[in-house]
Image: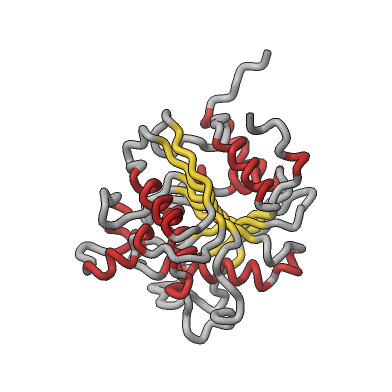
Length: 294
């Protein structure tokens, strides 16, 4: 029997393999991001397409976390490769960060425009414009929840796609997210996104559990009870708001695991649960999910 790979080794191997199937990064704002503070890499958000060998026509925007102060690489191309293995075309978003001086809604502008670029060019990518989801981790989960709740905050007057192409994903996968800026907030995410002294109105606007509305697309949510960095209450608050407004969703709270549990190479059960759900949403073929969930 082969000795199991360590989590780190598996992560690195998956990342390397993913990059072989990735195209070059594409600027989200070819003419320059709105309110850009410079013209270096940190001022120019991108999406990196990762194309499956056998595309199903479904697509996913991957939004990594990093407390709005960085981009965590373990939540980027490795997950794009995993999606590719199931026929899903993936686009990895690298958005502007609070560590570079960007505050809300700059990150939401980047995510919304990325979705509009993907959907607006669906025929080029050979994807179905009605089967484009998004997957967000930690602070990236917060960014995804704001994209679901308040996509209008990401509109930029004069943008060629604003108001013409929808920026809301057709489904959302939200993993151990930051949600609230009021109830047990994650300090660094709050500071990087909203600054040192945000107003009460801005705190409420950025607290996703307070911004849910009826008619949102289906959501897959998961967290662990033992998460010491972002309390599980964040996910529970968002799930309660989804339920209150009649938004279809699936919620998984796993007993064990700290923040970031469930990365590529861990064999965590959330992968099987997610595939089962993706099949029900029409994003993964039945023969790719059989036996993954007991």
